[in-house]
Image 1: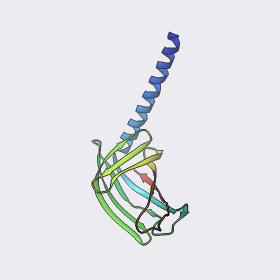
Image 2: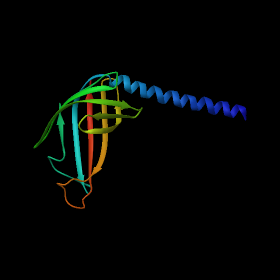
Image 3: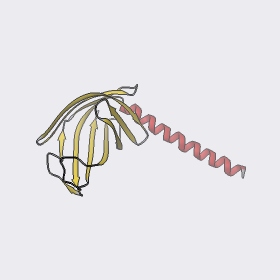
Image 4: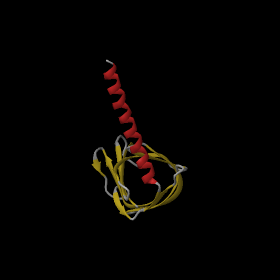
Length: 151
């Protein structure tokens, strides 16, 4: 029985160490300047993709800079057809082994799942379900964002 407890303890410790190291790897990789190579937004109304300007893709859409102290800055230019957006702000960031959360001073917190985590390329995704005053009454809207970052 003691042997089983020892084996379980070793396995649990290994899992915790691997998880922590993945988190640290992502944290270290984030540090520095990243170009937003591609920004994609798809908005669905009751499961049907909406046309631009609600949905679209933009290339060369700005920059993120992540500092080691958990702070950062972004400068974003998104042109999705008629929907041109310019923005810059400071933010605070945190991460787990599989996600990055960004909290801005003006826009709240956005949590992205990390799909690709390489030294020179990251891909993030997030999905948000919402309703808005410009939409049709009783329609459920879902927004999917996908951001490709290059260092």
